[in-house]
Length: 357
Image (cartoon, rainbow, N blue to C red; front, side):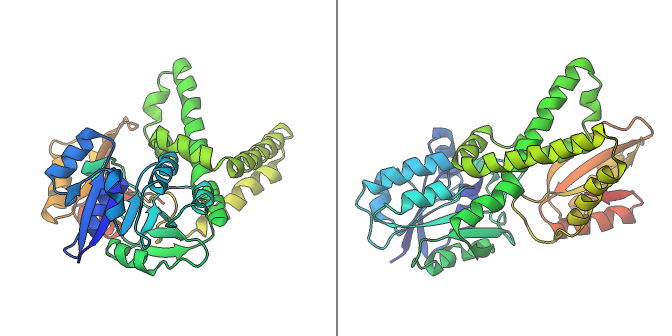
């Protein structure tokens, strides 16, 4: 008999999981609150069946691929249903403390999950079976829970599984993901105020500023849920961040050149020693920047090179910060291998390229 797997939430993560794990040995069920998403999922045969939560008692594995606050809601809903004694329920949320605390009172096995992967795109149409390849997939099981059946189901994702405590997980992602999102969003809000006074700022922000604040484009509802469910840790982290900003501000007030130098020097040293190959908490972006001369057909030539090499790109953007004879074409690739192959071929055609460091 085929194992029955139910994925609730068919956005980017849920749809990508469905595409990765779907095979003849499992019967795959799916649900999304959006009627449009359900219709698309049905049309592309993302799952074998579209079914509501009332079918949950039939399932062997239930994956909640929804925002954190929605996960808490669904866990309460599942608790009132007569689920199989052997059922495994997991989620894909970015915080774990509150979910795991609730899980202690649930009448079924819940194993927290957090695939550390993402994309420029969102929604069911962006589902990609390779999204999780080589990415870390965090699991936070309760004491005594067997994670092997869940890892076996998720093995086709080709993710790297790591088991850690919920407290450790939330503190780590708080520093490496949640606080950077807050800071990036704050910088964008500051730029909005600047633009009112200096309209030219919008054009200038198309380059480096746009890159370092890229994560501010994430789903606001998802990030509202994340902040509220990692509240205590983030309050401490924000206080620590404000302390750091107060120190550099005081160094500026005092014109303390050695202190200012140390601030940047220590940051550079730490940044230079970060791993470059592994996927981290914030999804990696495989971007290539290409100088494009003001010659008819230059962009078409680059795209022909990429197409003939059968390399897929997931985003294309023409930057407008240059006012000389060169423009900048930004291509975003699916992975590091495609980026390296694309750069080699484009440079062989005498285009100048550089990557994000």
